[in-house]
Length: 491
Image (cartoon, rainbow, N blue to C red; front, side, top):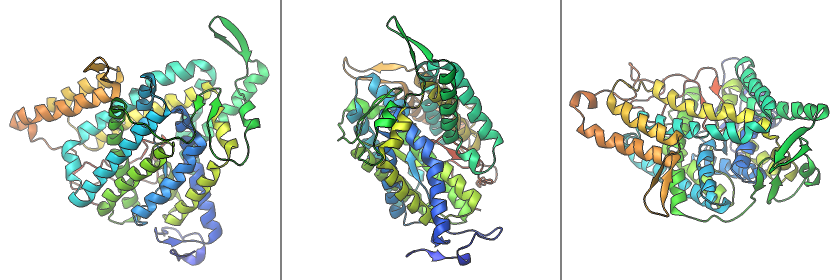
């Protein structure tokens, strides 16, 4: 295969050895590794688009396209897969609640991708200190936290009531596999939970059908309805489909733009900045390469990937920690594996049968999965605070964050005119950023001078054995660091 150097005679690396980004093993082994990366990203990359009302086949197809673009932009130095980002789920729910359709959703996401790419240009030519100045760890952590916790009622009131016992069993399965399983299986807990949920829902249907009442009319229905799966073709172009769980899932379409909806997704850019740079640091620790000069390129690559995907009607993209975990376990960092995974994903995208299976996911199963995922997204905000030693005894940190988080989680609506308002995540983010930067210059000197986000030795924390929190989009391997820490240098 042209462009990658064959090492170790194409065989599995000896203990302690690694396969670097520009190297490869035998063709058969690389094909297997590529397939492994596809399985690692598969669950979240298919499920989250459906939650956002978008066709999962189109999303996985565009994730492959976005991954190839990312690898080209970073010049093959940062091996990563770009799957569907969960950071936008809450904003998309808010857009639809305010009357927006899928075109408005993808239009807002496209602008978010442009913003991320512009930030990447600034970081590439000017350095990450520009981003750190506006988004210190205390602010970044707050925004990530309120994005996750804002979704709490979606899991508990939209999906979970469909079948609470199925949901609880699925939640228990996710927890058990994530904690008790080892290696690769712990990293695909969401994918395995989908299979488990399907199986127990099918068994429950054999025992007793689900009794549902709508508008005073009660009927018995199957939890697993594969009518759409049977009618779907094995090969075809992604298109609009109707899901018994998610409703209308929109296929390829052109985006539309509305200012009020664009404001709702901008906070998600902050989450992507934290997520992407944490992943770059993790890869840097594993490979031993200094990837700081490529951080801006990583932002640009993710931003352009999101722009291209949303322009075609797909979902936003982000680097995936599940795939970084696979690299840590295998010690194979070859970008060839990701090119193979991207091609496989594109081929999957042209199989409507797979998309129909995901679209038919029972509501209780989805409730059980999202109960864990949404909480984990929120807790990643706390993880950013802990790793960066944010001091909440300091009122500069405590008070603006407290106000913003409650505004975001409580869906506070700030009305500017009769037709224009910002709510929830956007409102909470504005409160945190504006209040923090207004009070900090006015505060007493001893409060302003407290260090933000450094370890006592000024260094970073190691990526330990691939252990990670697996959320599908805002996901961070254990030991990753925030991009906004100063003096971060690989050891």
